[in-house]
Amino acid sequence: GENVEQHPSTLSVQEGDSAVIKCTYSDSASNYFPWYKQELGKGPQLIIDIRSNVGEKKDQRIAVTLNKTAKHFSLHITETQPEDSAVYFCAASIIETSYDKVIFGPGTSLSVIP
Amino acid sequence: KAGVTQTPRYLIKTRGQQVTLSCSPISGHRSVSWYQQTPGQGLQFLFEYFSETQRNKGNFPGRFSGRQFSNSRSEMNVSTLELGDSALYLCASSLVRGGSSPLHFGNGTRLTVT
Image (cartoon, rainbow over all chains, first blue to last red; front, side):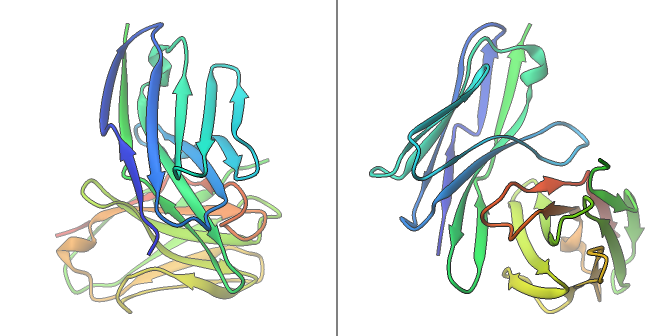
């Protein structure tokens, strides 16, 4: 079945530096790739997403890139701030005729040190 | 617009008991998905309901069940609770089927089984 790997599991950066989180997926049929941020005591919240017909998408300090050939996608956060500290989940979505399913990566705990 | 509401926020139950969790989706959202989140297993998909019908189910035993009402509100039931059922249970709603559109998560119900 579909599997999503995510690296690193923990990441610590200095405020103002960039952070990169990488994910790989196994099913080439996946065509929707959202990223979620989960703060302590809250549910995950969508921060950015990308579809398979697009190679890159940017929203202010956050960007996502997708390499369909290699089956991997990455989250880039520039000019990190303490409020970026959270757990980040990537996901890959398979849309099939009878059902669709979202598979999450195991998560990356990001700490931004002031 | 109000977000996804999950009740209760915390529950403590004893092994062998059963529990019902409730989820009110964002107004207009017809799809409701349930996830189990544990430190070791990450976000595990339980099931998805769309228009009162279960459309998809994850790899969980039959003790886990759910339903969706005509107003899209959903409930999840776990019978014969086991210690391993202790987890954060997250509900997410989406405008259309969950695989092709962003998921909007509630803040979860923390279940502790003693």
